[in-house]
Length: 365
Image 1 (cartoon, rainbow, N blue to C red):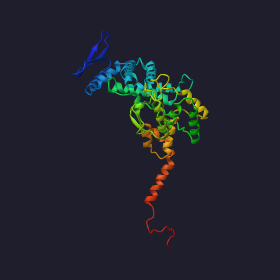
Image 2 (image 1 turned 180 degrees about the vertical axis):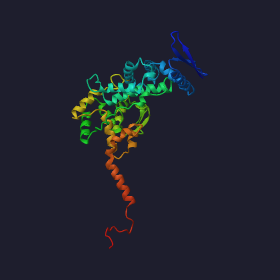
Image 3 (image 1 turned 180 degrees about the horizontal axis):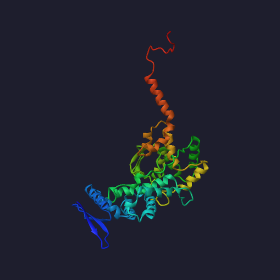
Image 4 (image 1 turned 60 degrees about the vertical axis):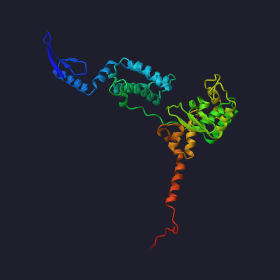
């Protein structure tokens, strides 16, 4: 329960000391000049204690963001190694700007201020920082607050969830035309690097990411069944990929001369490290005269070809390994002709004239 005690100082000044006692909690005291302020404080503290919120509020005042960033880097990042370097860079920025503040003092309004500063800044390459990059900065601090709220009981909510995120640009839709594809494959065949053609064909025929291809192991491939099983993916979800056609033939040829001292399919100078294909790839792109084309666009090419050959968004998502359909909706317009064919086929079946039905449109007068 709460008690309010009036106190008069030697100079005659009157103050009010509020004291809250509740079983299971330490005694909390505070002094105010006005009795109404003391009463309000005591009431709010007692209510927070009864609802189980007080210890979290106290922790938010006790811990700084620097405490949060350090603990997150020590305990959480080792469990999320794939993007650890970028996450550490984001944490460093937030620690420099918010590190000395108590968690209770980090408000949505303050985060909006730093969000806008990030958007206004230029990168080390003297280019404007993209909205997508700022979204990733916010995602890092948001997850840190979520962990602090759910696992550590340091805060009662996540202030990042209360601010709007910058609108991200529509994803790239660059994919190879038939002529561009033939020029690129021809350039890959002419390359002195024996791995370039199989890697590019795999990317086009399966939609695999560059890292997934370059870290491919022979134990991931079943040449007899024509499948690839990926276990180390970007979203930590295993997926099976059909392996057929030219991609299967090229891997079968590589398997005949594979080294036994490395598990990697596309190894480099060091057998246990993937080969760096940056220079052979860039040379092939120049030779094929491709404009504004990156390796990741081979993945867009695979998705676009799937869409144009009648695959649904769910089927494309399954092949590419997306957890949601949002990422593959950009290819839906390429399937318009297929969709039109499906609708036309349905209409022919359900509205086809029955035997003996006339087709005349003449009106009976």
